[in-house]
Image (cartoon, each protein chain N blue to C red):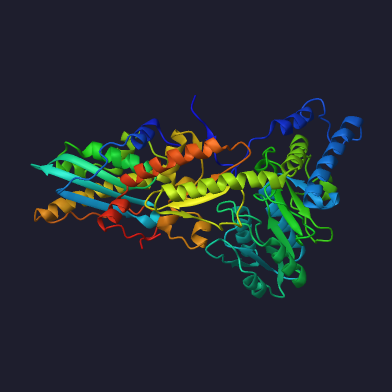
Length: 397
Length: 139
């Protein structure tokens, strides 16, 4: 049987058996509509409230501050559009960063077309924003700052508590897209002065198509989905009951020993990073060395292109991701890699390996055995590498 | 996403390498766009006796280069000149629309290599308008 090494946990994770078992009865015997008055409806309603408590507990929020959504993108859309619309009277300026997920960037573009002004903060070579630049960007018109907790590509973790403190001082709402962070790093919305936070279940071994938005009590926000009175009339639509139950269970499990989980992954991650840099010349680590997600490895291999790399890795049973243009169907490489200052040429050769629960030491050894050979094979086919060798090896990473 | 033929030519590319003292060499593309294709020709009596390539690019770019070299080996220069990107796509049993530019690169690389041969032989290069399907600005 072909070996399978799944190294794309940042894209999605498998729903854990424990989570699935918790969800299953809600498809069949416990199928009542939570809005119904009879007992099987009340039962599902109460299960949803239990999931809300599970989420609230992990974030140190109140249960009435958690609202379930159809995923992370919906939560991001709701946060930005909802705050923008509800606070237009105060101002129409939003601050975000140049390395956000498209669920934020595309909403910002939409808002710009509708009369809002958006400031996109640059990041340094490690992917961090400057607190001073953020401070200077805030005006009397600013209503919202949206900075992602951890970047989905390069794994850099922002100084969220500092950003939250500044926003609170400036009396500006602070939203964070924490889709990659939840379940991987501890989060305390009160301590970090977070007003709104997006999360998605399938990033921490829950089901796909369900997420949540934390909305601090008192935040002025309009609803995104209109219809019935679900979610305290703030997010209409019959609840995805099994999904919500799964989300609640998954977040509870993920945060049970978050420190231990992180320590195990960091050990494996560092072994992989060090091994790749040692075994493959002209390899560059992207993202901050320490302030990064425990399971994130993002590197660029000079002279080669990412999609070819992914196809050859797949042939060896390794599932990974690339910020290369070709892998996304666009012709421009990842906006994140360009934002940290990489040239197009280098950014095309990027590879993201994201570790997870099932990743073992043997998996890392296997990758460290296979990947150098694949890179060598592609470099031997690359006219850029040929040129480099003919020039006597002038590296330009 | 890719046909079996594309995957076969990607996994087992034909004619990879360079030809020492090649009679014609064509390099097209741009590292900024993520694709560079270089084709080497060995020509005898106006017939392409051998062709090799080196490519920096995606799976479709590698497969297009491999197929293009297969198509031109044994052809006269005139016949090779007329091999279009559509012929490369057909031989590969299709390419996703977003990857069509890779086959255009292959056609352009053949033209560049043949023109390089012509110039080396003291002939006028054939004027050709490259189709800009890359959507990526040249540096």
